[in-house]
Image: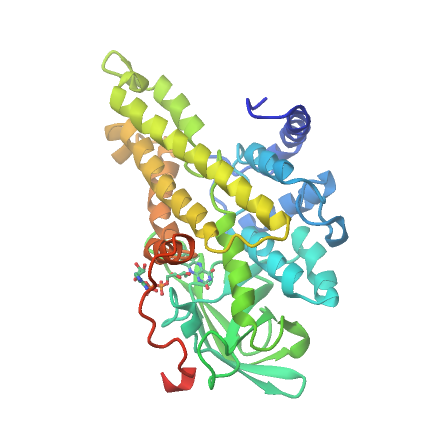
Length: 403
Ligand SMILES: Cc1cc2nc3c(=O)[nH]c(=O)nc-3n(C[C@H](O)[C@H](O)[C@H](O)COP(=O)(O)OP(=O)(O)OC[C@H]3O[C@@H](n4cnc5c(N)ncnc54)[C@H](O)[C@@H]3O)c2cc1C
């Protein structure tokens, strides 16, 4: 039992732990196990289907949407318990659950919810996020991909970039410019797009790691039915904010990447100067700080998720969770390498755990950019949470086509 659990939470934790122990091992990605992208996605879909069978998928989603209709603390407890296993839940699953579902549930029509909610929860449909463009990342409202109405369809032309897992996605969530004659935040609309639509081309980007988990996505006269528009024409920014808030809020939590408990256990077993690494006061202080940060982040995240479940909007507070998590993740994975001493730099053959932590360390730098770079999140927190003076925005009320 977690020392903070109420009796009801402890009972739920015991039930979830037992179910996970019986079901998760078939799906775990073991240390050193190399899966192709297609194998990962297939395993991720299968794990989602198993979660649905067990009644643990979409814990916060209402039963009418195929979810469990559960309480916030159940979601937090299940996340913690599930986080103890290395399961296939990368962006190929996370984008559907954490971004597509919330935006469709909040801004979509009953027919759209019916079509996509259960299928996404089951893992039958996977999603990608088609937001960033070569000249619009931090300034997402600068997008240039255009959609023009033609009868019952919209015709889309332009380019997206950094589209994670688009090469394996069935559907994409897409923001485009539908009216360039109004200021930039007002002229955008939001769609879901079938990734097999003619004219839509996904080109993988080869990364330094040798992997290609993100892509450039080109649109040439891609026809999207108006029935696939989410929200009103011109309301794209509000939809995008729902997506980004979900993305930021769902980062982190205890036991997720960079979890401290494992690291404390590792330090306690690692020989150092006749004792263990945990005997070093410097290591203890670093671990204690990281633990305190992890706990603060966990409870702050739970508080904001509770606001969302009550229909309140945490707004820029969600940026605090993302900023805190990605910075701690980088610090903790760096610390995990330091505790290993020289083996952290050059692990002995077969030490797949250290190789994974090296990967974590590199990946944590990317996460400080993905979904909102540190500097941009700090600006948002300064302006919208702390009420500090805003940045100069000369383009704010100028029609987009006159910028
Ligand atoms: C691993 C990863 C996965 C991603 N997956 C997706 C995806 O699936 N779909 C998708 O659409 N996008 C995705 N992205 C793109 C991501 O959203 C953008 O990289 C991010 O928004 C930053 O945009 P940019 O890369 O264009 O950088 P820029 O916006 O050009 O920023 C460059 C630098 O300038 C700084 N900067 C910019 N504006 C300001 C400002 N106003 N004040 C202070 N500093 C500023 C930034 O902090 C940053 O350090 C992914 C990115 C990464 C790293």
